[in-house]
Length: 146
Image 1 (tube, rainbow, N blue to C red):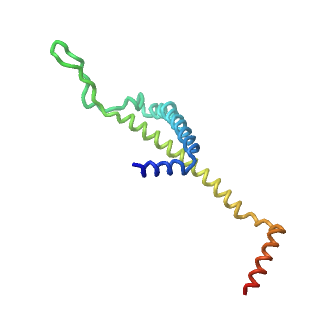
Image 2 (spheres, rainbow, N blue to C red; image 1 turned 45 degrees about the vertical axis):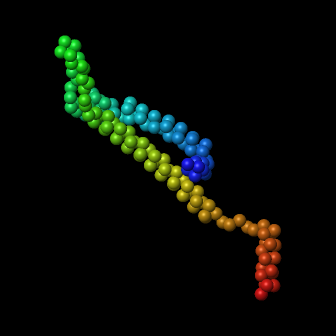
Image 3 (tube, rainbow, N blue to C red; image 1 turned 30 degrees about the vertical axis):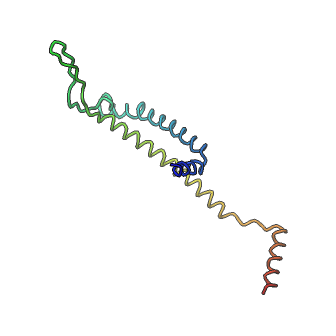
């Protein structure tokens, strides 16, 4: 158990924990924004186009609800249904989140490649007088050893 805890500590402290925490918080907020986009804007438009009242109401009822009958001694039975509309809504939600992350990563990677190309294209700086002197001393010492 001690090795597990020490390995976990090394893992947790290896990266920047604050950056990770900020990423989780921003990711949670981003998820709420995308869910609101799907629930409040996209799905009503899709429901309007399909002529349905809403995806959350789309379901396949396996067993209908039955009210309790005290005289017959029957307890109430709840409705059993497959809510495929909510499943469709969650798929759309996932696709929008995945597309958003893909676009964000693509923009970030383009920016990083552009920065790397600029660094590679930049000419090497002129060596200082001190560096030139040290290079000459190194070369002289190499010649003396031969």
